[in-house]
Structures are given as C-alpha cells and as structure tokens.
Amino acid sequence: MDGLFGDDVLRRPAVELPDGAHHVPRWLTLEQQRWIVARFREWSAGPVPLRAAKVRGHEMSVRTVCLGWHWRPYAYTREAVDVNGNRVLDLPEWMVHLGRTALVAATGDAHAGDEYTPDTALVNFYDAQARMGMHQDKDERSLAPVVSISIGDTCRFRFGNTENRGRPYDDIDLVSGDLFVFGGPARLAYHGVPKIYPGTAPEGCGLESGRINITLRVTGLTG
Image 1 (cartoon, rainbow, N blue to C red):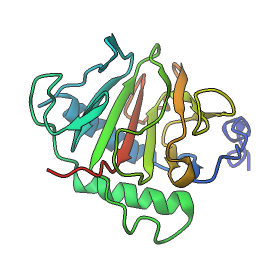
Image 2 (image 1 turned 30 degrees about the vertical axis):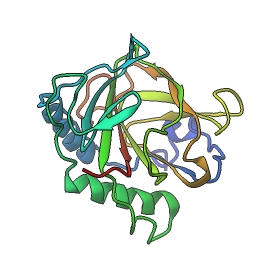
Image 3 (image 1 turned 90 degrees about the vertical axis):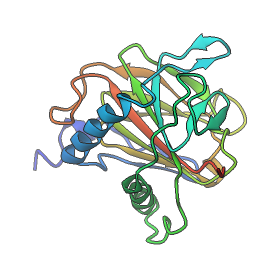
C-alpha cells in the first residue's frame, strides 16, 4: 500500500489545465526511457550535431537536435543551414506511432491519433542551468497538437495563456517519463521551463543528469 501512495505521488497535486492541454504522469516506462536516450545519443552524433540555436543573436541555454525538419528561429528547413548545411535525419516511423499513441493516452479518445502524422521532432537537452523562456510554438503552418515527452531530471514547466507571457499560468513539475500534450484551444499557449531540478533523474532512465525533452509537431510543410 505504501508503494501505491508514496511521497512521489503526494507531492504532485493535480492541476486543472485549460481545454486542449493534458498531462499524463510517468507515461513511459524506465525501459522505454533508456531506449530513447540511446537513440538521442545516436542523433546527437550527426549528421547535424546537438547545438544551441541563436535567438536574436543570443545563444539559447538549451541544446537541440532535430529530426525530419531542422528548426531555427523562426523557420524550418531540411538542411541545417545555420550549423553545417547537412540534411537532418528523417523522423523515424516509430515516433509517428508514439505520437498517435500519446494522443490516445492523453485524451482518452481511441481515435484521437488517427489523423495525426508528426513530421518533425525537436529534441532538447537541458543541463542544470538551462532555461526556456515563455514562448509560443507558432513556426508551424499546422495547428495539430504538440506532443511533449520528458526524460531525466524533473523540470518546472510553466503553461500559460494564448494572449501573453504573463499570468494566468500553471506551474507543473514534469518528471522523467511524463507526457504533456497541448492542442485545440491551448495549441498556441505560451509555455516555458524556468527551472531544472538537478539530481532528480531516476536510476535506470538512461540519463545520470540533465533532461531530454522531445516535442513532436506537424509542420504543415512539404518538400
């Protein structure tokens, strides 16, 4: 009984999210997390390495590797024109399946993922000092949902409104294995990561420190 209602569960109060946003705690098993971390290390080796994008001339503290399409502020291209000019790796088919399965798990609708075909993944790595300012994911032409998966250290995730970077917003601690989905009326909500909790990655997740965040998106682009 203690294992069912341990401190971990009690520390995570339910947050009433806006319509279109969903949080599924510990959606991925440790085995699944380890397997994805191994894939992350392969992606980071190239052909386009893990890099910190520049926003208005300033390097982000978060480092990113992209699949399917290469993101740079504020555009997508097949080639990493701001890094080394190489074409990014294709988005693997298992990630499309993962995205569809995630939508079903998040919404409880068995058909929620039927029409969902993500074509890019932004895979971000946060070290203990990394932060992500409040922003909208609006470089895509499609407003299909964003599927976000966390592995490693816990982060404070701030999910806000669609009008501005300020209040109202909700602060949620996302732990390793958590799933977060936002679409519909919440698709253009401002969101960010103001804090990482070092040393909180669970043993067996594949990361000793830091946080990996995978966001699956539909760009709406062709070519």
